[in-house]
Length: 212
Image (cartoon, rainbow, N blue to C red; front, side, top):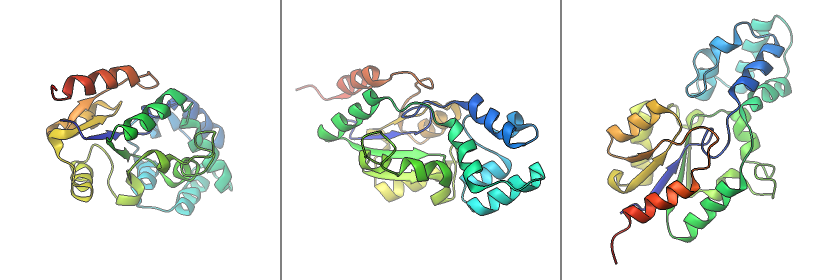
């Protein structure tokens, strides 16, 4: 029986606007921005930031180096926030309902301090609530030093949360992330970026529930 549901952030809770982020970094002056940015797992200095290998200030300095000008912290944040699209209230309401039903909710996200600063502020949902208020536990790549689909990230979540893989459902829009979770015995769903998965999830939970 499913008792724990693990959610990705970008592409599942929040609609991802990859092309808008690319455009903003291009406007910043980053050469070949489209080749440096990825919808699922970042590489280069972008990945180093999301894995916690460099600080936001070191990232800013790298942006200065690549653009040949003084890039501000606010400009970096604005470019990263290009990824963040809408936060559908139907999904947030679904999260609230799931917790009321007794499910444990966990966030598992590849993200960085620029996005996390906004997500953990009262501006997140438009009603004064932070992202953390919707979850029982939260695991962010830059805080733990791993990025999906690294198996060590999933192993860390298992150890720190005590979840049982067979009783855990994972929602992520990234194919490699879903494959990595399934390899560890987690149940999975792969909704497409920006789609409303709430009805499908409720049907899945009803199907997995034990007969009364």
